[in-house]
Image 1 (spheres, rainbow, N blue to C red):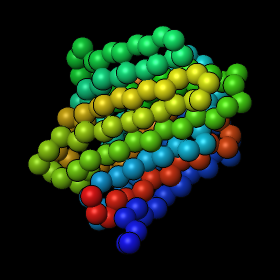
Image 2 (spheres, rainbow, N blue to C red):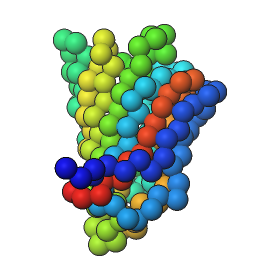
Image 3 (cartoon, helix red, strand yellow):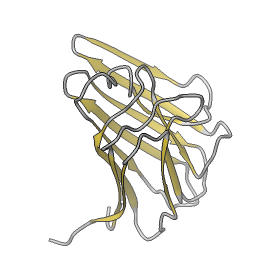
Length: 172
């Protein structure tokens, strides 16, 4: 069977940082997958956010669903926002925990210049939270840069040892 995922780039955080950016994303794939498979935060009580191509112009819509053991929550954007919400990084992903988190993001039709870009995200920390979000980047531009972290006034940071990898899907 042919390999369908190609690794585009990997970032391993060696000192705490507020954001991680993947830039110069090639337009040779059908979709993108971003995985933060060993992810730690240094601030509690924050949501991780994302911006595409540096866009801060209120072109994002978000819907989120989360479970915290015996409780749950959901929410949506009441109006377009300046960034996409990735997940409850601090609501359940606590800085006091040594347990890493995982985040998997799927970017569909990322190079198509005729459609808005849907993004599906799944995230968890085994003892605290499991959740999903669906975001829409309301732009027909191709995605060539993705920035994650403390955006839109949020101050969470990536802790030392966080590993983030961006993959291109060769055939979807």
